[in-house]
Length: 112
Image 1: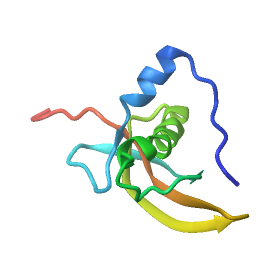
Image 2: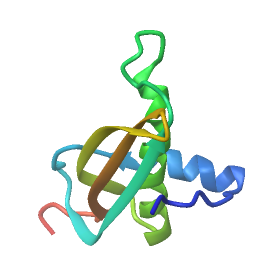
Image 3: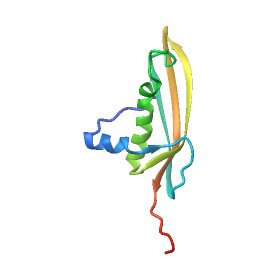
Image 4: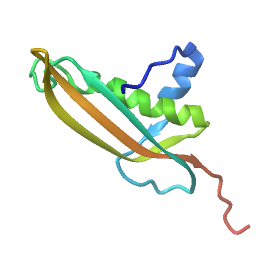
């Protein structure tokens, strides 16, 4: 089942784009909110030298960030991405499955 894309307002979309994604941990205090999963199928050859993988994979990054936005969180950390090349009905496709830990950064006080 593929994730359905919601219609966000321009303000919501801007806030979603500001959410941080990281494939590792971060050196900031945070509270774990949940684990999120997203999937996407691209009917394209992602390895075509004419294409830009960053723009092709922007949707999967947006979906992860949108999940964090729904929690009111600030980041998705320890993200993992898995992919598979498939041929369905004679069409080449690239399936991506991604997941990560949704976190809310917390304020810390020093010497308090």
